[in-house]
Image (cartoon, rainbow, N blue to C red):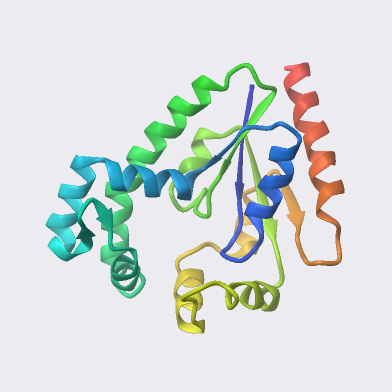
Amino acid sequence: MIIAGITGGIGSGKTTVCKAFSALGVPVYNADLAARIIVDNHDDIRNELIDVFGNDIFEGNTLNRPLFASLIFHNKKFLAKANSIIHPRVKEDFIRWTRWHKNYDYVIEETAILFESGNNTLVDKCITVISPIELKIKRLMNRPGMTEERIKNVMENQWTDEKKQAASDYTIINDEKNLILPQVFSLHQKLTEINHNA
């Protein structure tokens, strides 16, 4: 089985790309969604985050995400600390998940921070989804609660498209000119063939 990681900067459209892979029957692990579930259901994480950020960081058993975002996006030390608490648990969960799906030709981890979190060491192939920055901002401004300042803060804490591309095996262009489905299908055939020939 091949383990592929799909990444891309915020607003690149990696979720759209992953939906196309899912439609082909490929299991996709959404690291952001998994992190949300793990944070809200893991006592050790809750206690560690409260130690760092105070009791207000949780409302009952649920992370106060607007407060959390406002703290980590303006403080690199807080961001690094939060990542050190959350990412190892997500990594463990992903490793378990890949074992459950070992009978597939390949599986995908969808994550915004494949390289930044070091999870690229857990995958066999890295795929980056790229989009022009103007298009990313246009997409993101349609999301609830998004401002240009917040978009800028997120982008500053992520690798650039160029840096991701240089570290990746494959690139998918999502610029509303190049069709996504032919790119996904071509990559699907390549990854399936690699596994069959392994």
